[in-house]
Image (cartoon, rainbow, N blue to C red; front, side, top):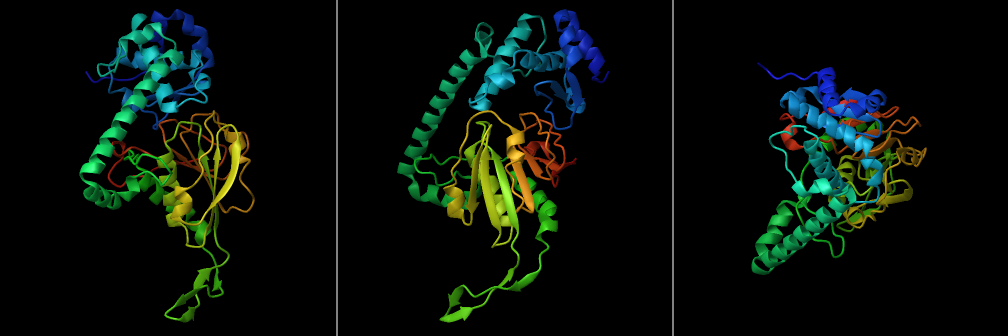
Length: 360
């Protein structure tokens, strides 16, 4: 018999093991979302992907939903502010998994366990995982340094051929590959959404370049498009990915486009103008706290024809309506009041020519 997923049945299975969660379930909203992989949560909502949930037996379905309820009950979203989001999420999941297993829940067969996590707080588990991540990063840096010393020429050629996947030019930064989450396809889809704002009148601009001793007049768009990009820097998105996104947006705009980039977490840190690749490489990334989208959307100015927010979506949506394009690098479903949403999917989750759009 094919495995099915029924939310009411799953909730009943959870309450059999944890009847004390009855009141919690009454105040939590459950939403079916195609972006969940297969589950997720925010402060008062559990998200699930009914199609992907059918890949798990019913006991594992209850385990996955119960895990999100426990994250909400333990306020993991708020407690992790200011920490490395990826490590914090792993730490919280490790602790929750062991607590659920101790309560008699049956985990998915593929679950990665940290069996000592049952006796640790999320903060204690975070410290362990963070130290492990630092050690792995140090080992990686040492291996890369060794490779550079043995074969510098080949490595330089490789980096040039694969420059779109490399880190920026931050002084002292370790050059390393970054995971491609489908960003190139999302940026290509973004070009279609930007097209209406790029339909501009043309006029002659004063010459500003000399070729072969002759002053050359250039045919340029006037007025130039003006785009403002807000980057969620709440310690949950890699700086390499942020720069890759800014680079992609800059390339689809016209040469003379005014592009202003601002960082935000719970505060907005001001705009920086981007004119060249050097500006992107030296872009100052500020912020490491929580995320406040209300602060973000109020930072946009009236000059921008195009407004873009790049985020992982882990925060409550703003109350202020804003006609922005939201590029979301996570499985967290977002529903902003106004604007359009593009989910940046990982390659294995995408069809060959698919960009996942959700128009809101």
